[in-house]
Image 1 (tube, rainbow, N blue to C red):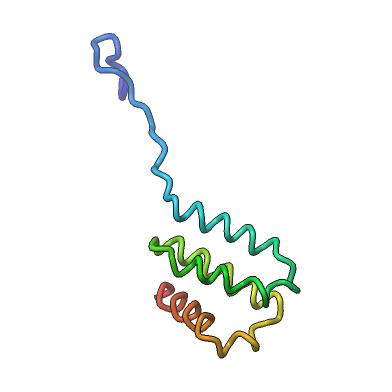
Image 2 (image 1 turned 135 degrees about the vertical axis):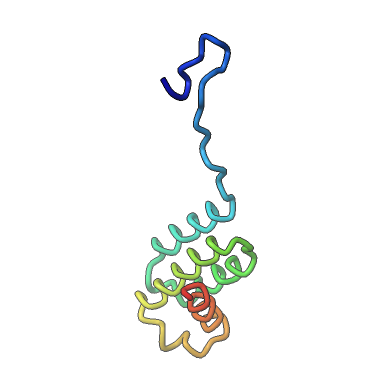
Amino acid sequence: MGIGAKTSSGYGRLELEAPPVDPELQKAKGYRNEIEGMPNASVASQINSYYQNWEKLTSREAKKLLAQAIVDKVRQAGREKNSAGKAWYQNLLAFLEDVGK
């Protein structure tokens, strides 16, 4: 006797619904996959476009995911020294630090 035990009495059955999907999070996951597949030699010329996409996001979770992917790729490509003085990179690091608190 429990949930759904009274179906013959007209109480029906319990059905689990999938949680709503955050479209921005899905978009950020797609960008992350693209970044992860990007050759290290292309980071200097392409990474800023992902930062511009990051700026357009409003979901905190999506922004965190994409910011971390960008920073990780910059580090992986050995471009952290070159990027450290740039405003976009500093914004990402500040955001990640703020989210981590």
